[in-house]
Image 1 (tube, rainbow, N blue to C red):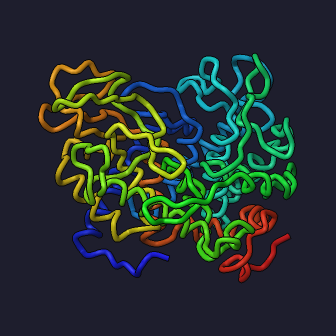
Image 2 (cartoon, rainbow, N blue to C red; image 1 turned 180 degrees about the vertical axis):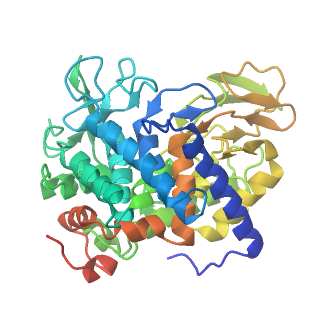
Image 3 (cartoon, rainbow, N blue to C red; image 1 turned 45 degrees about the horizontal axis):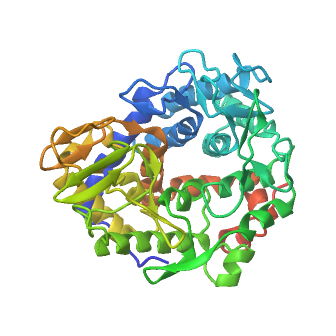
Length: 452
């Protein structure tokens, strides 16, 4: 467990600013009528259903932080849930939003239907449903609008046919397309998909069997990286996404019992290992150290090589960067969400680092908080970058904010400060059912009455 950490008044003021600006991304860029949230902004973009899940999580946080009223949040959430509930489900290659209760990874922002030939995504549907269930638990008043939110949330979650997605039982497929059927990949082992299995186990209508979770953890790898022993996965988002919504502090499944820790501690160790990697900086990336670290899936400057300061460097555009005993993928591009998403796990290193990033690289912090990423090593004027901008002598900076990276910043900051998302999700019977079916015991789960 992390040491007891109390933020200073200056740090609290920074967190206020960080949350307010990050919240604006969801409130200002999402369509108020349909609730569709763009994958990125300000670059024109399609909707990401995962970003919608983070937006649904953001709205109650906005209420609690007095950025919007409860009535405003109710109206936005109702519109969002109604759109997804009423949108067309079917096997057609175009004109549908989803199929078997799942939704396409990306949707057209205007029509709300499948974007080009994108896949029906199980993990992105799971992230959407996590936001749906959080709203179901948060909007708990006996008022017509909030009763309707709870009913729509139940309908959306209940119709997701997890069994249909098990084309290679007991695993769950990554997705499906009308043209080719199920994708040739399944979810297993440590990554962002723990939440997929937990939600599938908690379903009131299409629950998968317990051996699905056993198969998932059966391929997780335990190892050591920079003196931190843990289940490995290189990008930090894999250690964060599930715990945006699921409070796993003090809870253990069979894998965690075998190693005498919990998943929260596992994520802390993965965070500390990346922090140590940045301080060591074996590849001598510019700026790396206690004030600049954090590798995860994010944008990047270019696909190609450049010679900088007499050394050839290879850079990438969007990539799942990371550092672990599993693999290292690093081109000097730091994503603030990688650190911020680990705030509850290691606040003593995360908060000072974020504040230092803002101070040292002011171009990385603007109207929606932190831009998706930046790279201080790529500081050469005239480089043929694919996106963003280079400030000579300072570095490359993304111009976009990404919904799936903004979401963990906002939610995990709130979980660190008040536990808001965790506290409401612990009350949700579907969350409880999924955890129990996966074999979790201990902590708050043992103290919670089983709801039928």
